[in-house]
Length: 445
Image (cartoon, rainbow, N blue to C red):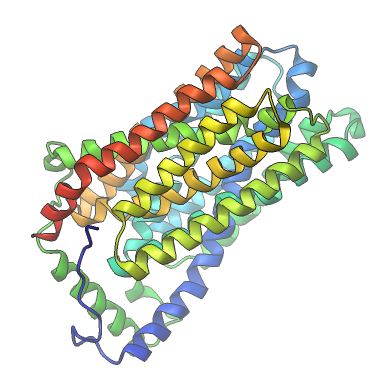
């Protein structure tokens, strides 16, 4: 097993370990729950079309191909605007950037209730991607301002598990709204979903402006001694990592950056497929009631959220990220493979397999984000993290579009899921074959 040795804070002379741990606990309680809630809202607003699809397509007389393209076109907005957004965050701070992002996606989510044509659907989904672009990589960058490398996987895991919790909340919420509010004020149930789930994001944007703190030195909720402890510990961490590239243009010539883009592309292909077509799998095996579909997906995402946190905690404890990411991706691929095999054979086995796919795929994501910070810093980190996420998320455009096309042509999801499983297993193979040398190089061995 390849590990990355890191000096302990106490050994580095940064002050009593108990004081440092207490300070990080204070930071965690201040930042992570709030960022967690924002990511829950973002994820619900992003993926609610996976649930409204159950009735929206019939009401509007659309095909699965139209839905798949609209679901995926969101990521084109990501692609074009993530890097500028993250560079802007580094320049003007997280508070202003995250406020803008949250307000934008909330307003667009509400506007989705008025969609009537495929063109309008495509435009608003693209606009949703434009506004949300920069939130996910922005928070990853933001957390590097507050946590040293050996504490980040846990923080990433707690934050990113919000996508799993969003599945737990979003599915039953969408199903209940669709069943109970259908016809109220002359609106269909799916229209009410966009309204009910968009308004909280608009409110959260206002709260963000007053609540978020850009960097530790500006945190008035920490004592001067605590701020100094954090500054010293982060300086210790930067020194332990040695030289890292700070120029974004120079980092583009580094093969390690493109390797990580390819790895994450494979993971996102699986994650977006499960996100946007998971409810369709549940429907295909025989569960058609929107509320029932929502509760089944909620249970799967509950396990996924737990997997993210547990994998992140174990990664931090063992100070190892490579194998934690590879094995989780492999588990996700196995789950997708079994889903495609069982979807027409056994509803129970198909749903269990899909849950395994969700656990594995989601658990790979937090520990993956440990890797870029090993060789990127400053503007290169801001732009590099966004570049990895934006290019890799093109898989979020291609995979749903591919699944929608195959579903329209064949009438089933199994062939498409098999292709996605093959793509995700490539992530594990790439990590196992190439990341060992990459990690050794970063660690200076």
